[in-house]
Image (cartoon, rainbow, N blue to C red; front, side):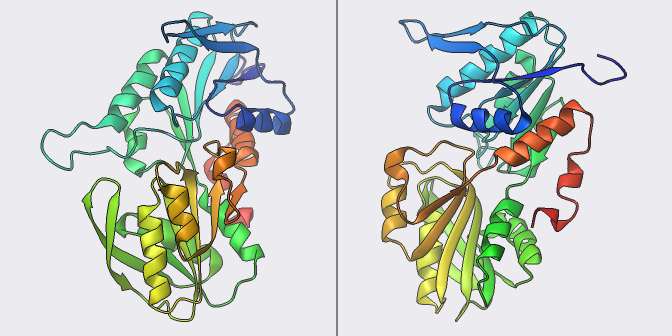
Length: 321
């Protein structure tokens, strides 16, 4: 390292999303680092690095998606392997940060798993985290190391701008996504609406009311993640009943667990646009779903981290559009 800049960098990947990792390194003009992540017969994870990382700026691309616990342990063990191999700096690139939904004590005796996982990643030896659309912005503060927080909304907004839809309205499916919806509405120069819902239990939601004008509009519902798709399909069905012309939906993280795809297929959603922070199995690639890549953005961000460039300038203006 000279004057705070490393002489070289290498990118490695766990098993969670090798397709995304390979796309990132192809953009960066680098080969993927040689490492194998396997399991012993009893299920313990084994990591082997097949090239030197001493004094190198290393990046480990690993989404902590399903199987969440296996992928999280892979990340932690890879970080430990890099640290014990004297890597110069260890950057955990986590396109999807699992366990983020429990980010506070909503009721007595709740765990705060977002903080617990942050502690584990830090204790394992990571020097920096690069992630996208954390479930809550305060999760950045759960780490005692630098966190670069990328935003997926401009990629989604550019896609809808290119569709040249008229009478647009961006809809927040709940109160927690209002800021995200407002930012997208500013990019698209259109109004917003808010779905007022209640959640009687986890993974279940009920629409109570819609705040804003949606009648006759092409509505775009935006959220950070879609898990069982209850929230987003209930919102889509409700605003369609209230007079929306067409209903589109988009999200950064396609968790899509349980009955998600069946709900999307049967809902009033005309098109679901998602980013590839999580791999999508072939059986979930239905006609309604359109996937956009985050690889160019991560490649640019990782290059800027390596050269000590600014990450925030990626989002200062609507240059992505």
